[in-house]
Length: 174
Figure 1 (cartoon, helix red, strand yellow):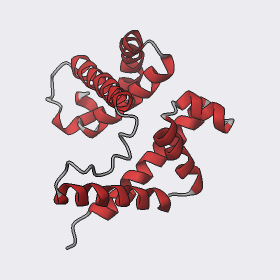
Figure 2 (cartoon, one colour):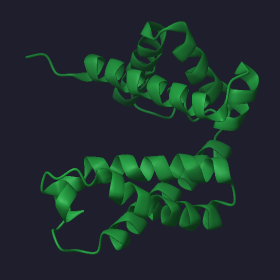
Figure 3 (cartoon, one colour):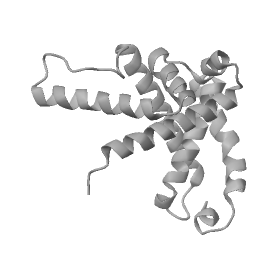
Figure 4 (cartoon, helix red, strand yellow):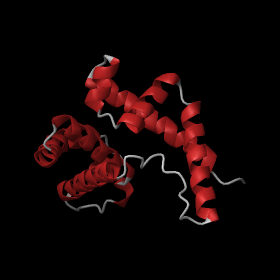
C-alpha cells in the first residue's frame, strides 16, 4: 500500500494479495458468493477513493477488512430498510410533514425521476429493475440474458451515470 500511494505501480500486487482474503471474509458473512463479489468490488472502490487517508506504515489488511465490514453493514442496513418500507425509493410527502418537508421531498423525487429519464434506455432498465423489483445482480443477468459480470458492469455504469446526472441537478449555481 505504501508503494502504491507513493506512486509505484503496486496496485496489481496489492489487489492480488487482498482480494482472495476480502472475498473469504465477506462471503462467510454474506453467505452469497455473488453478493460477496459485489461487496469486494465496493470495498476496492472505497479503498481507492480513501487511499489518501491511509496512514503510511499502517496495516493495510486491517484497513481493508474495516472497509469490507462497512460495506456489509451498509448493504444489510439498506436491505432491511427496503424490507421495512417497500416504497423506500419513492417515498412521497405524507400529510404529517410540514410544507417545507413535503416540497423538499417532492423536489427530490422529481430530480431523481428527471435524472433517470436522461439515462440511456439500457441504464434506465437496470435502474428500474433495481428500484421497482429490488432485483439482484444475478436476477438482472438472468432477466436480460447476459452474464453476471456483464450485469455487474451495466449496474455499475448505470449507477455512475445516475450519480453524475444527480450531481448536475444538485450542483449549486455559481
